[in-house]
Image (cartoon, rainbow, N blue to C red; front, side):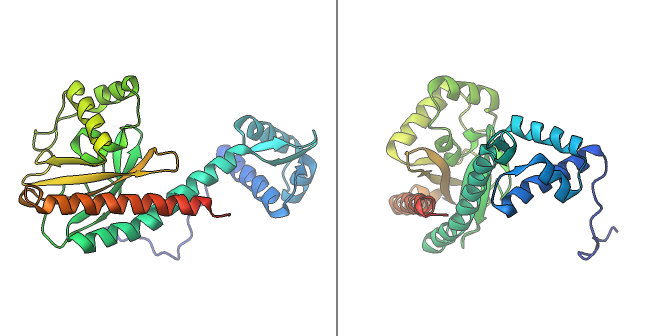
Length: 270
């Protein structure tokens, strides 16, 4: 039986010219950030003990990729791509932090299993999941990626796409669900997606999980675009009873709360 390596054991350093170049480029970017001002190639090469010719090659590559931007022809500052990557990182951190709070609160309120999902390429990615107090078997788990036609949340996540883009995505990714009851006809799926978005929530019962279903609501950004979807899974009898209206209201309210929290976080100065 293989034993995990002790956490105190140092990780091996990457080897090869590519890894060395990457470390040097990161060092140059970190140096500019720590100095808080634009630097010349000579200053970076001297401080980091990098051959000047290598430093020039790295600067040219980073300029092409938007990692650096020229200031006056001789000095270089951090480029726009780093800002964009930083914004993306911050958004990811925000949605996981705020999403954890909202997911737990919705689970505690309803007792049902709750998930937070977003798109990862053409598939739905489950970011967070809290098991409910009632035993309901759900196919997707945290980290799993599934076709959008398997889930109520998935259908909301792609609802901002125009008809041509939506048709392309569905045609390439639609697949039979574990129960075989999820919709796979692209035209019917598109109509369903438009209806769900217009009413502000989506529902599926028995399409992916036996004897259970999901209700989902979109999490919207400041421009009204879907950035995530919050869903709760419940036994089919709960979704086909007067409790359904309560669950729809709960998941819709929680999704709105998460969107508001994320928008407020973006509005605060860094």
